[in-house]
Length: 540
Image 1 (cartoon, rainbow, N blue to C red):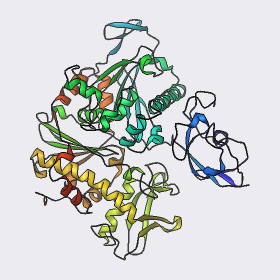
Image 2 (image 1 turned 120 degrees about the horizontal axis):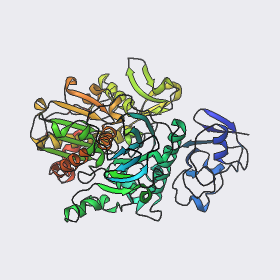
Image 3 (image 1 turned 135 degrees about the horizontal axis):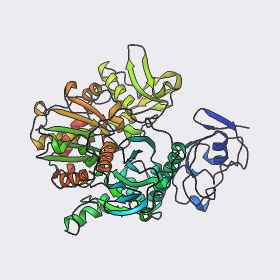
Image 4 (image 1 turned 45 degrees about the vertical axis):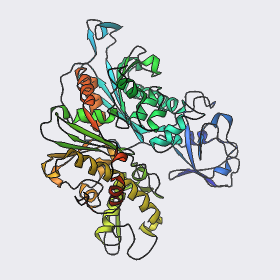
């Protein structure tokens, strides 16, 4: 009898037992709302080893690709095989520090005597609490703040891995998936996960989910529109614009922001709760970047600053209150766990820091746990250290002619030439966005007062190492400011102060958007960006 494993925990496998039953025994939280009948599509797991030792996928699992299964439908047929599974709700590391913008408390939902009012309309009787939710729906991670709308206090921050990974690790794959036979599955699994998290918060903190009277949601254009049930196929083809953006350009709408209710969206809070989807900027530059700009106070900035929100799609913004320019870089998932053999997102057990000496490699892991892989900050350190020690040249070729470098000998974890090629292209996408926006804006780095690094990934990178390999523009360290999850902070600002929504919508109307691919020398810039060198002004 062989083991069935989840991370470093294992049980003996038994014929006929489902993955969900093993998760129960291991006390692993797996979402479900259909009594394990396969109808809700919430309990998605990744079968990392031993897929052939399970039953053939059932009709309820037809929407899943590759090695993904429903935990309630997958059961053991060969107890002598090694089986390993992972859930799609691993707990990301929540940022403990983020930028804070102080705004007057002017919520849309208020208490008047014994009533709860949305603007001037009474919507409920007062039951002791008026809460709101600010949600940042990222491609990799979803984060939310539970906010007391009477005091302005953030009561709880929750996060979970985006469960849509079965539809692809990047935006374009998810757009393709959503346009196929299983249109609507990505939306449904996200709604189910949000409702699961809301229910868990309510139980843990001792309140009723109907005490949540307003929700502000931000995300990139694709993530936001999928959640709101808007067809995203137009975002995947030139000119890469949301259907809502097309409506604004045709004069049919004044803003790309969205207004709906919880009952219409399917969010299990107060049914008449107002749901506000933050405004998009243009193309792939979405509401998450709008929220970033609110968080850093771009609407009040006199000095020219630069914002870099690093993720599967990296967004670059340069400007001040008078002029703003932005672009989106399709960096892909390489620095977030995809396309790299031992890559993984920033969860417990990921190598997050690397230091090389002549004969050793010192690796630090998240949570000081046993290493399971390497995340983006660790990859940036490893690449920078390989260059610093001259074990790898600017082209990504190892000095000793080998095909891989072993960074964890006891785990036999390596960084291969193929891994480096994927990382070089992802890095170059970031490089191109920064270089081209800076060049078009026409202000040299010396005259830009601040570089804001936003996002969970950017918060944990060694900024100097990122500069040394050209992942981040060549700013002096004194000008680089890590602002954490600025998107969530911006969403929270819009929740606490209704007036800031109008500020955000006005700001997005005036952003100059650059389509990187239309830049005449884009290919030359991209090739230069693949080199593991600091960004220079060498490209004319």
